[in-house]
Length: 147
Image 1 (cartoon, rainbow, N blue to C red):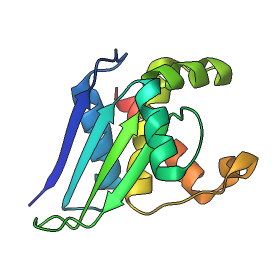
Image 2 (image 1 turned 180 degrees about the horizontal axis):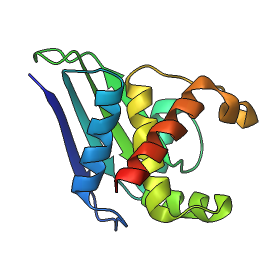
Image 3 (image 1 turned 180 degrees about the vertical axis):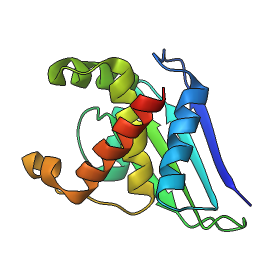
Image 4 (image 1 turned 135 degrees about the vertical axis):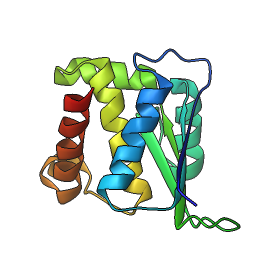
């Protein structure tokens, strides 16, 4: 088995190629020393992610990323996960933080993969000082330099 990353887009535009997303997710798995994994990344509309956010987390409104880790039953993979990203929400967040849409989408890919791997962060402003956030930003900088 190896690292398998599948990328799909459901009727949304991406400022970055699916191959670039796949490579970024695989780079996080490599950096975290994960040898066997199956990860699915799907880009969805703000409306779809809002429905998922309400159904799964009981939160109202659209969010930028949702991640679900799961044991990779029936495969030789050591872990698996599904990541959903809303590019429309990412664009708004990117503008608010002075980042490009491309950078913000790659940040969300890194963020989602780290969550699938079991990393967590506090809510609110404390998240920016958390070990997960610092790891995310270090991995993102490495990915942006490679691009």
